[in-house]
Length: 265
Image 1 (cartoon, rainbow, N blue to C red):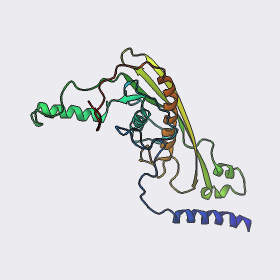
Image 2 (image 1 turned 30 degrees about the horizontal axis):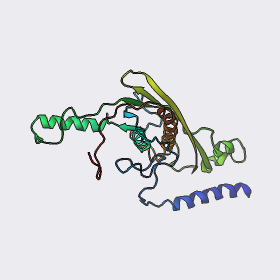
Image 3 (image 1 turned 135 degrees about the vertical axis):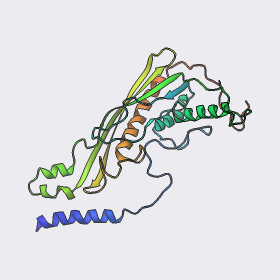
Image 4 (image 1 turned 30 degrees about the vertical axis):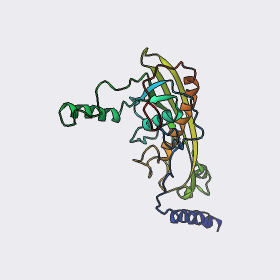
């Protein structure tokens, strides 16, 4: 009798969870550890754990890791973590971030359109106005594991009585990641600072649902994929550790600040 009740109870639990899986859109929900905004109004909605600087020390650009970002489980992330790290850097106030990615390509395009006579000649887009990147930050994913430590299903598989029901078992998925951030002085090419960050998360899921590598998160981004959220949290940890090194740097000569309302030029 007991052998029948165990799988039935597990199936009923799975059914109850599935019934609660209603589609609903909630603004500001379902994000990663990197949240909020940054800009003239300051760091709004930033993670409370984010370590900040009292003033920026230099301008900085973030570049993609040339090796890309691939999880151990062959779970390929389609997008880059750099935009979220750029948000972290701007929220912390340690650097003024210059764009060397999509934004720069758009600037070059605007210049080209002006040279071709398509854009008005008295526009606000002028050559020679760009700010230099005094430092460059390069992110790296040194380790990621989506099923570290196994789960309850693995334990059940070792018990003769329960091994036939592991496909229906509630499983625990341990997700771990270790990342790195490298900071290079563009004037001297010297690596000025480096830091690693790590994070670990334990997610509860039900066998057969879209959890873990290759599940429903496949093809999603860095802010709504369970595995990627752990990696983003690791970058937050690495950034906090890097800030303690950055705070010891002598400030470089910064370009003029962006004008804001109520502030005299």
